[in-house]
Length: 195
Length: 195
DNA sequence: AGACTTTTTTTACAACGTGTCGGATAATCA
DNA sequence: TGATTATCCGACACGTTGTAAAAAAAGTCT
Image 1 (cartoon, each protein chain N blue to C red):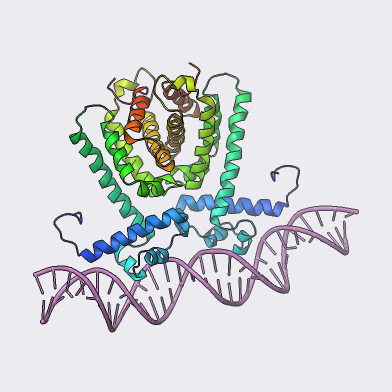
Image 2 (spheres, chains in turn purple, yellow, orange, blue):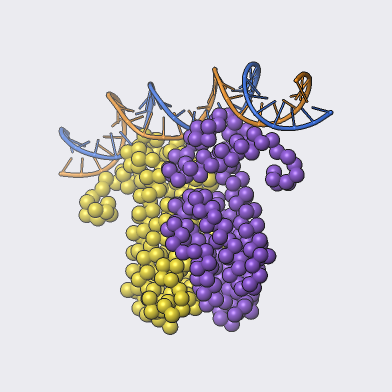
């Protein structure tokens, strides 16, 4: 039951939550996560501190909810591009993902780029583990002596970490170029069955 | 000027710091990092809270100092194995590293395994970036269209993340086996010149 | 428009964590 | 042993946390 669906949400809560989220991202750009307090978030959002607690239990809870929203957005971005661009290559999913990250660079830079916030890393890793597990085949690994779960660990970590370094360095390559790089690197890995 | 060198250190400070470090690792096993306070660390270490501030500015400072010590230990473990086991393979460095991690599983499980503490991730990533940058050759990448820095991002993230997943899952494979897996995965990547 | 509901604000409170004193106590060194 | 150094103790001011009750503001509905 997403709040963007038919269940009409009071515009005040939408405004408040957006202000709080923007404030948190701003503060993450400016200081270390452990220096961020509810006081500062509320002050930056021009929202009363008590109001914060009407929406989130604490900062940890706020980040978890933001991470869940991120997961939804990412999966939407990945599937959308598959339908739009039916090029059929194995880099289609990645292209949609990278374009989404590029479009929200400010956000992703602070939550996975500079130092990063663990909870977001976790959720992203879960996404990649799932995706790679679907794409990997036992046939492509057996005979080469590569264990499946090790290959999944390897691939998902490489994907997440490369994207993290990409945004950390202010995205020196276009999403298209990086998607191509991924395709080249993964193709030599037998993580995907095609090719 | 390391404190393990000739500058004799008062055994009381050694004892205090060890108690504090052990306490922090214990607490990281039991609760989220943001729930850990100087109060709790001191209490667990059976050390007065004021004494904590005689050694570290705050918890962040304590973690940074521990991360520095970890870097020293890891680089020692990596170079030591090179001298001991002169098998000449490209997986020698990794084997020393993995054996070190396995020997200190309790520590590495909490700082990179379960959720993880960003500062330690950073330092480890720096180590792997440096190592891979030394091992990678432009020749092995050019012509294949793979950008050097992307390959370094990819390789270091894959290495760190795979090890993190390995300890997170309580190390289901031996260091020797995992080192071999790394060799297989990296060999198909042209990150190293040999093969 | 009005009345009704929901959200936000205001003020206040107790509990806890932080970082730092000065001075007492205990351990180490020479 | 005496001198030095580390640790402990009690205490302080300050900021943060989470919650409460009641007033004010904004949104909803007919």
